Length: 214
View 1: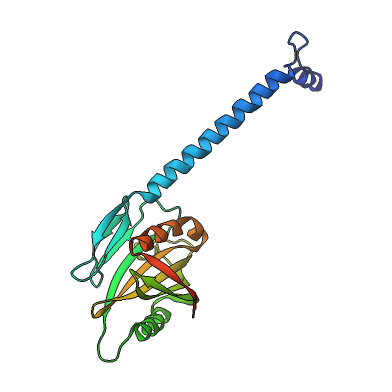
View 2 (view 1 turned 90 degrees about the horizontal axis):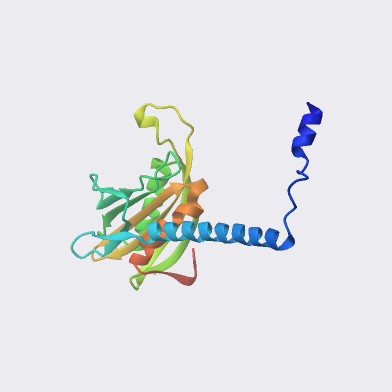
């Protein structure tokens, strides 16, 4: 058997080895094919990321961009809910838009503090990672990045490991309300999925304020 394998592995004496020019042409063809596949993949992804539709949030509120393939709805207590049907995780990347009315002496800062307290009660292992001052359509806003632990299959009675979620709350005022735009995704996929947060934020003309960390 060893002799047979050696004979099979040995180059045939009846075939001439390829010339340097032939090897070079083959290598160039392989490189071109790889580059074509790479640019094709980038083009397909960019088209999927940039393909969007605009949703009106209501009177006196700005419109917002939603990725075209996302499933949308309006659960009770929200202005808009949308989720990706193709996330590589048990936790689907999602967008939630809610509002809080400004009453009495409430301000954007006090609403942001109250929301953080609510998050600590509602979300398991909630931890704020960063808070930055931004502008939204030229008006002051706050962008809060945080993480928590979710159990997306629990309601279905399935048993699966919990998922660490990374999310961002974008808060800004519109009329007598504070609008809260939340994008959340599996933390292990955040670098990949945050392109959708970028698309949503660009539709609201979000700009970072220099030195605006809290």
